[in-house]
Image (cartoon, rainbow, N blue to C red; front, top):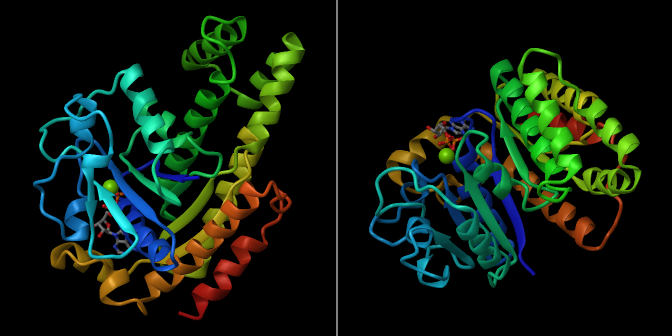
Length: 326
Ligand SMILES: Nc1ncnc2c1ncn2[C@@H]1O[C@H](COP(=O)(O)OP(=O)(O)O)[C@@H](O)[C@H]1O
Ligand SMILES: [Mg+2]
């Protein structure tokens, strides 16, 4: 079975692509079969980071129906166990993915012969991005410790939560009408409360509401705090966790705290990922901790094991300890 790992962020430029490439390499080096896919349609750049030429058909070909399966789009990389599917290399502009093609694409991803499908998403909160992000309960969110990046991460999760809630009910259902109406009225200025909305649905529609609540409780995004400078940055992780818990009732699992490191920027120019050129680099060492935690969460999830207490913050504190040793 393939474990899907979509990687998103609220704000662009926080390191999603750098993390997608290096994390995929680390997982492949641990013996997992990995397919890395560039979902930043319109701004695809993973082939550059991997040192591959921009001359192979990619997801754009699938979306424009020139290919009906992902198999011909798959490229070998220099890393054993790691395959790559490019974005829209041969197509200028952003392909617009309709409902049916999106459903077909998702089926294809779910049928991949791999342990992990790592999906590097573009920025923004379009329905396409949110639907790919919501393909699993444990998707990954990247943020930097900057306040704007933290607030954008929160906004992204809020948009994802509303989308996730909406998808629990049938098209044209009364529940969906209530959600739509709620979003419209809050857009007009009233302070919106996601938690109050969920409670309202549960009181008006006890049966479907209770079912939805069970699904919502399974949703547990993983977070990497990238471009860290000092362990004080972890305060932003704690704030994001409590904001998201208080406003959205969503538990975040902090899996990684990676430092700002000029080697990551230089790797773009040399077209060689740092995980390959310098495995001892501090960013890579920290990302390796994240890779191990991600493997553990996948295992817990697949085996139906309980993850830790939602209010437990030992994961964040442990990341600080390792960071200060760098
Ligand atoms: N930890 C880091 N330290 C230094 N530079 C980084 C780090 N992570 C990413 N960068 C750089 O920041 C820029 C944006 O990163 P990128 O991975 O393209 O972000 P995104 O995919 O989220 O838009 C790139 O120039 C990248 O090399
Ligand atoms: Mg990117």
